Length: 149
View (cartoon, rainbow, N blue to C red):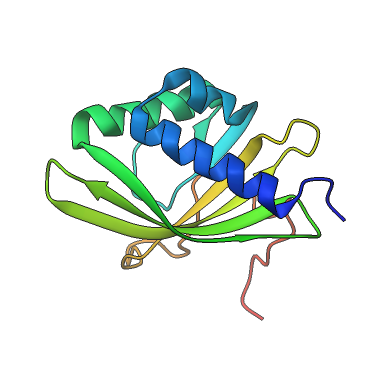
């Protein structure tokens, strides 16, 4: 049983999204543990983002460069572990485009801050990759299957 309530985790996620939309460096950094990691699907440069400050700088760049705004569509928070899953939309206002996806959140129980995000995009798979997975994510150490059954 997690010490973090589903309500506390949802509050942290919503506060994080508000900080993203406001391009608020301090509030973004405060949403994460100092050593947090944000994983992304393959094909993006310089991923994963490692550390609260790197994550904050990344989202501020998106707001300033792409006109990014985000909305939360759905939230599911575990009552038994410090984890949550959301659906979101990333609105890129300067190009008039949007990206939809999901994210898996892992929280640090002691601080209530986000320690990891794993992003999934509603987009085609990279046909050039033998296995579509997050760059820099240690699948073996996390107990993921490395071969097809």
